[in-house]
Image (cartoon, rainbow, N blue to C red; front, side):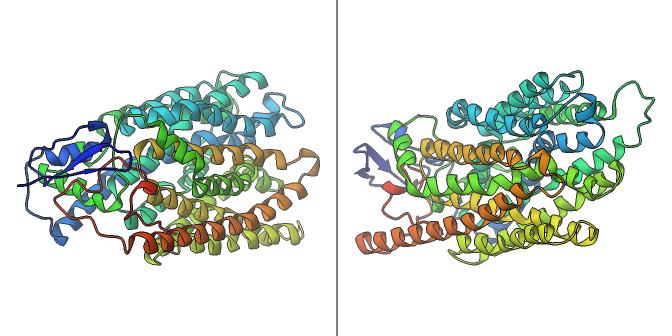
Length: 509
């Protein structure tokens, strides 16, 4: 069969051929690993819709539980400091003034620093192995909280925990983009990035609450030992079972691995390429859409950072006992998770309206924040309803992640972009606890103002993103014509090119 050789946007000769034939390239670094896999793999008949349903169902049954539990335990490690405070963490360690707030802020500062090596590692190291290794290290760090009894020691541990967890969100994002089509990604994000941590954290805190005061250790010490040891065991398990892509997914047959890889060509975002490309780094740094999502992540996570550290304390200030307060934090996760599922499903079904979907979702935490601030403290029911609605800030964050996955092509650009977006997450979480001033308790006026301003700013950013993406798509249609579909059986869609350098790439808005 004749081969069609062309010069790509970087003036590198690239050969396109039917799967199963010999692939000839002048510069192999231009090809995604999926392209080499398909070109050298046994050829199978075209995939039927029924076969695709079976493959997706199989991927869901393995990948979703593995990633959900890892993401949940990672979040528990970060947020359980609020639960520990219910059991004397602050008083036992002699914390005063803003010392506790700084424990909330130092973790995302560690993440900011950790993203420097993480952005390189996530592009060079298989995502499954990198995630399992990071999970093991930060779990060991969590267990080290128990013997620590000084504020400076906790500051060091919180910084290290954030540094190690810097790989988590980029790895989760890469893995979802490596197994699912663009339209399949939002609902999976809604599950993987679910707010189950509040449910687990509330349950663990409730269990710890029954440990007698006469026990050898303090209750908050048992909390960290329990969650840390569970995560250590799970991290070891994850190392052996979590695949990096459909190409090495042990739970798929050879034919299913072939089809699971080939079907992702339509994404035009690639699966894996280990060559670091500086031109893609510069493109990521100059892409206005990337910076809009980074800015969005900073602003949306200002409320997140505060609520993680102070959510359970706010409930406790309403007059509940530590045991009851720990149980009342569990609906945080139920509401945030159900909201993420609902709005992610809507974002997947409502074509090119993801930014608008996220903006609509922001009306819920605005209502909750206003209700908490406007209703009297003696009206406990109103305070609790408002507090629960405040946790609906999570669905817009999850929907926004799918915009990054769908609109970023080129492996180096993806690595840099995912890290920049996580920097935004860390920066927002660093700022958030500082808006809760101890002298303003229990009303926390500064934090309420910060939340309302943040939500309104996020709505504006999302609308700008929508307009920028729609304008770029129209410009491309005028210049190149309507986008052509990727043909099955070719390596088209698996050349390691950025979205800007693909004439047929259209942005999801």
